[in-house]
Image (cartoon, rainbow, N blue to C red; front, side, top):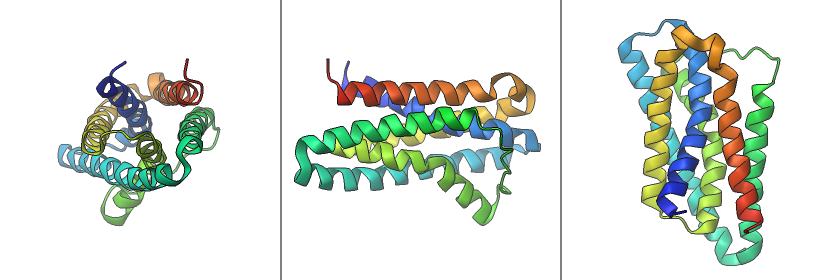
Length: 180
C-alpha cells in the first residue's frame, strides 16, 4: 500500500472521531456560518496537533529506533480502543458552546488523538506536510458533514462512525507492530 493511501486512510480514521462528535453538535440547530467556523477550527487543530506529535515522534525515533516503532503502533492501537470504548459509553456528553474559548476547547478535545497519531507518524518518518495537511482537510470535511447530517440522522449513525474509525486505527496499530 502506498504511503499516500495509508495517510488518507489514517486521516479518515482520525476524522471519524470528529465526525461522530459533530453529529451530536449538529443537533444544536447551528447556522451555516457557525458550521463553517466549527469545521475550519477542528481542521486547523487537526493540523497543529499531529504536527506537534510528529515533531516529538521524529525526535524519539532518533534515540530509540525500533522501540519507537512499537511505541507508535501501540499508540494507534490504544487510540482505536479508546474510540471504540467511548462509542459504547453510557455517559451523556455535554457539549461546550461552539464559540470563542468553548470552540477552542472543543476542537482541542476532538483533536487530541491526532497528536498521538502524529507521534506515530513522526516515529515512522512520514512526510510531514502531506500528512498534516491531509489529516486537517479530511477532519474539516468530516466535521462539516457531521454537523450537517447530525441534525437529521443522528439517532441512526452516531455510534458507527466512531466504531469504524477506532477499528481502522487498531488495524494500523497491529500492522505496524506485527509487519507481515
